[in-house]
Length: 197
Image 1 (cartoon, helix red, strand yellow):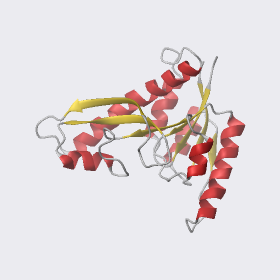
Image 2: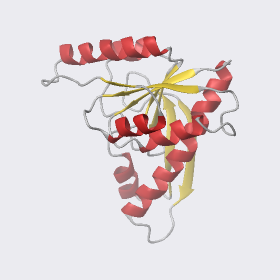
Image 3: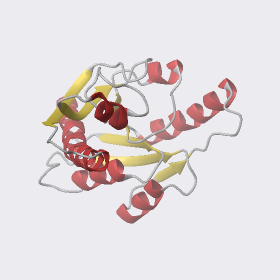
Image 4: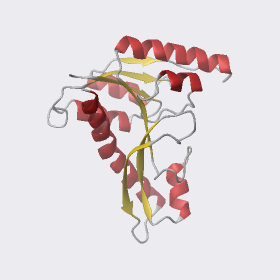
């Protein structure tokens, strides 16, 4: 049975693009699963252009200024309405730069997935690449995990790592980590959907 995902993104959309292109490739997606919706919180973000180019519906759900609990709840109600209308079986975070409220996380528990550019549980938070690089860890990599009410504390679904070569620069590490993300995330999401089918 074909399933649907919705992607939440805030930025340029490189992970969103990698996922969407994998879903459009019958060789990688023989089950015919689809990306039903992109939800973006940033007007003018590159991911919106990616969605338009790939023919994927999108919804812009900006957060009003102020950052209060009421602002977050109103935005999340609008997101939930869009996700339900799209029939999303999984909600996939791809560079979505908002902390989701516990009530939203609980609403989507077991169906809310994120990718983090470090080997969790080491180096959680917004600066995973820089923190792992600065740590001197011999291995760098990425983690796909379930989202819970903490920050990058949900159960690990998949990880992929590589040994740090001598002389690696931060810029080189970022490029390598993004390459790993773009390989691991789509395949992991498709595997999760196959498990649901």
